[in-house]
Length: 476
Image 1 (cartoon, rainbow, N blue to C red):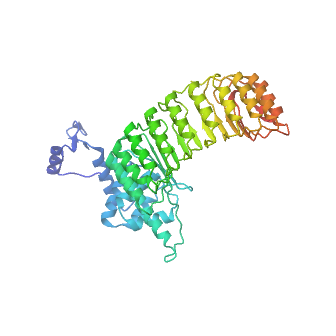
Image 2 (image 1 turned 90 degrees about the vertical axis):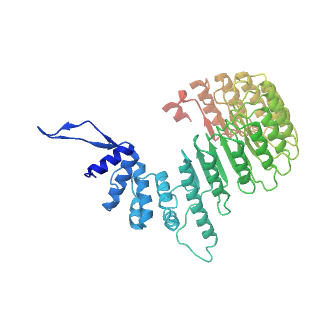
Image 3 (image 1 turned 180 degrees about the horizontal axis):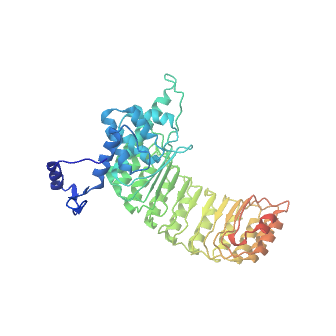
């Protein structure tokens, strides 16, 4: 890729700042030379791409992403499909780079044919596409591919008139992350998602600098489009939550799962969500408010919502909040209400102690309680609480099938209580998680004995790594 530049060319390039001249060095006794290099690497990458095209070849080893992208862009100018096929099939090209090259090539028919022949080029067999977007250029790329997939969806829908032998996997779940994305970049992707032939029903956004304007775009997708929305590690203001809740109450909103994990939701935000959950048009069944700023005050308002006839919530995650025993007592009371539909509850945080467990056990034995899965991870509960829970597990009304007590202060004494419960005819437990607890080989031996009892229904058991060895594995 070497080339001799004329003196005039060198002076122009040096004057523009694109070319840097190094110190002269001697090649022979009376001969010196100078080496020039381009100041910006992108210029070198562009020239490398031009050289590959002129030589009618693609890189036979991994090179920078920009070389591939420049080649795809230059191919679009020359309409060189054969070379583009060789480029896009390069073994050194990861999926995200293939996507960028298709966008640079800008040939929709070529892109559609590529997706027909490579149905899992950008998503897995379940229709999941997870991408890290680092700039607005990446947003343009994602938007282009989504538009191509929408066109294929439209053609597949009319396949009675036009039959294709090759099937592609459409995108149904899209995951995007990137703290440097701008509002305009996100808007471009959202415009593609709104397309009537786009089949994305699950949207996961993470680590994005959020604003109220983003919520307005989201609300357009919520009307008749999304069924699952995750906004992870995105700080949402009270105003943003209120605007989101307005969409949840729209008759055409089909959202059933809302994940606001680590989004800074506080008691004010919880009050807005609670009001939306009470609306007859709200269809939410799963709500994740984990690792936020919710206190007992927020829990009290949420408990009022759970007892409301129109509330359809069956799964609630509240781990990692500022909730204490007082908040758990309120939840226990709500679980006993006939209108409460909760079947899965996660209350994992250090603020919970043995004090609140009796009220929770009382709820588990109530005829109106529908809970089948309870997670109490990373709590201060001890063997005393385990004994109380085990009494509840033996009650005829208790419907629990899954109990997770990971990272709790449970010893072999607590395991003895659990083993007694597991052998009781009324105990319905099928999954028990005791990872990162203080049980030893003695506790494991007791569990192995309980597992052999005819009344024990356990099918899944998680234990601390410290007790795993060949002898224990043989016992299990």
